[in-house]
Image (tube, rainbow, N blue to C red; front, top):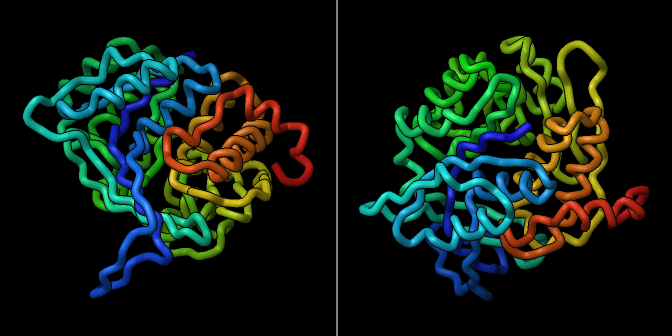
Length: 304
């Protein structure tokens, strides 16, 4: 079935640094690159590169042609990607630590803040009950979109990143079927530190929600509050840039579930894809093709 991805489209300005800049510090970057990015775009490309049918719904400014072209080249349907003529495309300022590959990100919403209820209704015109809808917290009208997709009978997947503003509203989560988040987001939503306690706290509040919690170097876990949690170790790779790792994981995991894979198999596939992603620079350019991920299966027992 197709996946309807409501998400951000960004230009990523990536600066290689010796360390993350501190308050009051002025520091020269070691390098600068410009990539296509945005959690929505990254997740849609990851979905498309698995071979899934994905409809992307979002907005860009007049400077966003490269983003729509990239989506189209990946195989995503862009009939609901619109141009806001008076608003710049959203963008991100990303520092990448030259030693660890870790990043920190500042986001400017731009056209991502122009999604309206009418726009979401138009984008849902192709949706049918049982199909997946995927959201992140980088676009406007989030609450409306989650509720309308839930009412329409779609399976709603939500990645509450960045975990600020609307993502902290507990009224959103009864509309969510699949909650895909990392440890930091889990702590912000629950106040808990330990992964299993994060899952327990979320299930106590939203008992019908399936949880996928990514744990960085420790891997990932799935919990639904009924069966024993399922754990997936991370694959060992030399990290170059972690910017799109979570988005790659989300896209590959959701595509596998949509295609009928068991949860354990979906976790393993998504972890393999994310490991390849962190070994490459950039956001969207780092997302592997399904053939590359399948080829890496031969190394799945140790490192990629």
